[in-house]
Image (cartoon, each protein chain N blue to C red):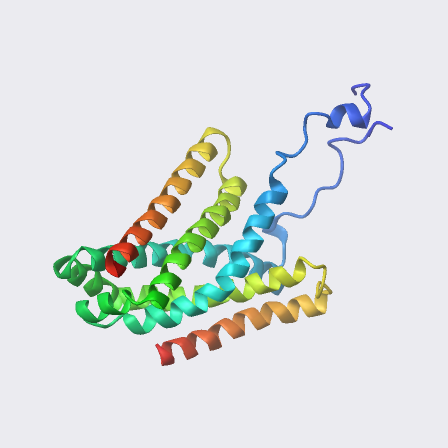
Length: 123
Length: 127
């Protein structure tokens, strides 16, 4: 048994100080997706099945293009934050750090790809 | 006061001896559906990239998404998406310390599962 007070034992073992930020970021993005997801499902859904000309004409319109672009930004950010929790639960040590970096890279790469594609179709 | 009983306390029951309950099941499903949506997300992102590249590349991605396999993935993803959405609403409610009573929480679990199936059927009918 070590003769330390509870306070001494706890000092330095505190949180990473960013838990609330992560929680809040997920909350904000989830509310945003609550609006965006139905809009995206019912714009992308009917568009899927159209010809190349129909699809590119449809997503050149402001509303479908903006909904898709916003869904890419918020959706991939929300995925990144959510997958982070999954990784932190099951992967530990160096492997955890590497996985977190890879998932973050994947999320932002997909986000950038989606935005580039929408911009190129719309402009 | 120092804790003299460290390391010798009863532990929380672990997964292997837990009876499956609607509350735990619906929580695990939230995680599975949320992370599994990466597949549909990447496929749709790829489809948009192909559409921006030209008719030839679009034909490849579009053909894949509209194949029976693509249809299957997208249909399951719609189910996962609506489930994750309803479970997310449940979390937003729970975050306010509301509806956490066991009987209500169990009803919400069923509401998520049944609601997601209903929404999926509606979506597949409309889209």
